[in-house]
Image 1: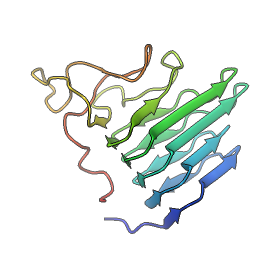
Image 2: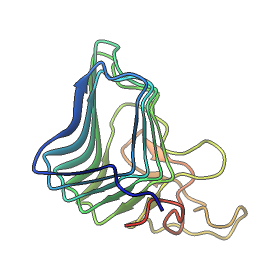
Image 3: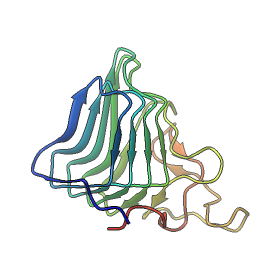
Image 4: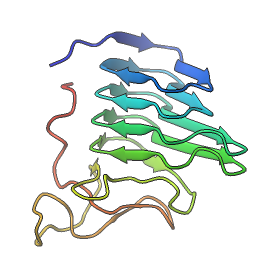
Length: 171
């Protein structure tokens, strides 16, 4: 059980341009416009954070081919307007992996309309927990929904978790 390294309120946290190769972990981030905002950022890991009560829990923005290959995993993303919001201009912010997160009580869990340029699961064993997922689990492996979770027309979590990710940072 990690102790939060940052408790941040009423501001934007980690708002950087060309943010490369960093770990953003073990934080409690709440009541901000954007809890974590990465612009044109590459190869960062965002994990084991409690992100709640923000306009956007995590905001990823890329432009002109910049930004991507970020890993977002084992976070509690709760009670935000948008859990994760991904936007891009001219082919930026792609190839991100988003998995083993708990999406609970957000008005909109995710915004990503980019023809499956980001991966919303680990590709093998699991994706994310979505509190509004209504799928079934009758086929092995158990604990993973048999029907993908639809994020947008072309974007989906292929392996939605039936229960919250239990190793996520404690609330």
